[in-house]
Length: 258
Image (cartoon, rainbow, N blue to C red; front, side, top):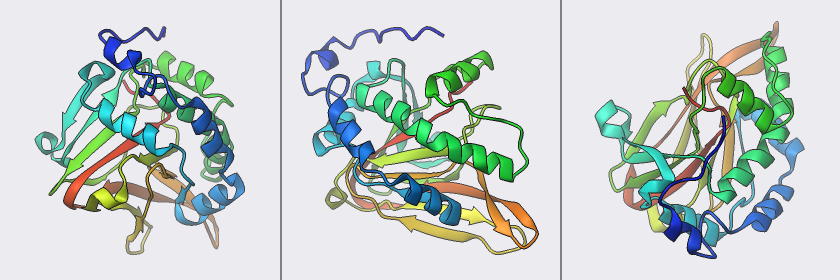
């Protein structure tokens, strides 16, 4: 699939600090600060891991401001229309903003070995290429060509029901959410993970993030070591009701959609 230019983005692209042009070095610095051994251990133990800030405050503001630019997105979803919750989100179109593209390409290779290990533990035959480009080529060959990174917008009273981000048969088992808003700008709106364990009650985790911080988590399931080997636990994620203010997040999903 050839990734063409977005039509009608001249105003976005003119700004030197725009979401499309700025911040490659800052993204690299944030990723370099990640302790990947600690991330892997946390993912194995809890099904999620948090990172230090991956985006600077100005990058977060630029991506949040991008939400008003219709030409940057391929589609808009109003959650209440589909029973997904309240609030809305928009899927970015190709080419992605530079910071989003950089994050997606830099994070994937570090997660691919974890994805391999999880799949092996669960007896799955699917393997994941070492680079995002190779993985996306496989997605596109399978008919999953639409980009999945998205920006979500919540206002007072909004929430996101528990769900899984599955867009076809090709599923990379890990994804990432970055908080774009300053936590001081809203109340409520906590990121929530719920793990459904066989023959046991479900377990919930509430994950606190600072501006630019990321949470990496299982898309749909993960392996857990039991007394007789590994077993599968299902995981869903959502956002609790926002009591006040406004909250923007960036979702980074590594597989594309049909």
